[in-house]
Image 1 (spheres, rainbow, N blue to C red):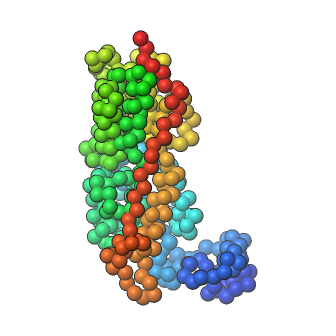
Image 2 (cartoon, one colour):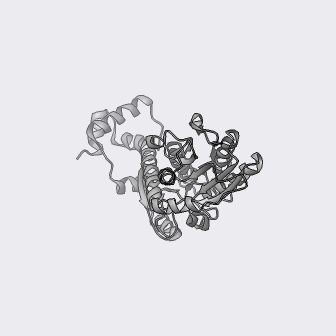
Image 3 (cartoon, rainbow, N blue to C red):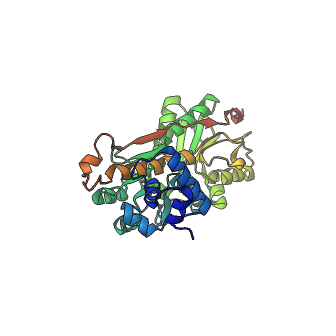
Length: 358
């Protein structure tokens, strides 16, 4: 196994210079940094985490706080699919910044994150599956622990965060359907347990669907998507007719339940999109099985990478400078202020929309 001295010899520099380049503690020339990086790659050098932490006071680890169970994420199938994509994107983003990713899962969201924060296992956390009033926010504030959210909290200035504009996404979906002539629309929002938990995306989506109905004059009824074929078929059978007849369009805010909706509609004799228009909100990028449906994709790569960058920036802003501590007030001052990123939705596949059957 290569040592830091081996890297130094190959790069033609002192071991301390290798340490400076790896930890970013002192300015070095680009030529020197490049020689060190090439030597590290050639020798497959990995500094021991304990030694690195003692030198820099940092672990170079970002924790991904991903709660499990207890209504933490809705139907298992869709949630697991989304979680996996986010884990990959955040891990890749962390690696690009010189960090490792620690996956922190717990049924009790607050206590799980607290254990990570007080243990010193990570420099910062990326918090997923955010509720509007998320208890994990108070944990990181109490412990002055750097963090960023994937999700939009009720208090938008409390921490750095990034999210899709779920409300505008729902408005956009209803508007496109109304422009195509659909007057009876059912919004299959997030699972009921996510609504009860006051999951940010779930509540903003429902608010947007209702606003879209008001703005377009379309009759929008809200129900909840389920990630089970039999339950989905029963749900579609129970949808009552509105003033203009049975719903001619569905908006599905769920990464995988749309496939059950399409299958259940076919079993009931309603073809998609000929007899029933289906718009998906939150589909995963690159999901070829969803490509024929009008949709608003969940920008997982941008959300995952930006959240890691925000968390690392928060950690850097709080880092003591040459023995001088930095207060919470200083960390929140200009230059270390919380950043918020709300991503505009993009409507894809609009050419697949069809007017309702006469």
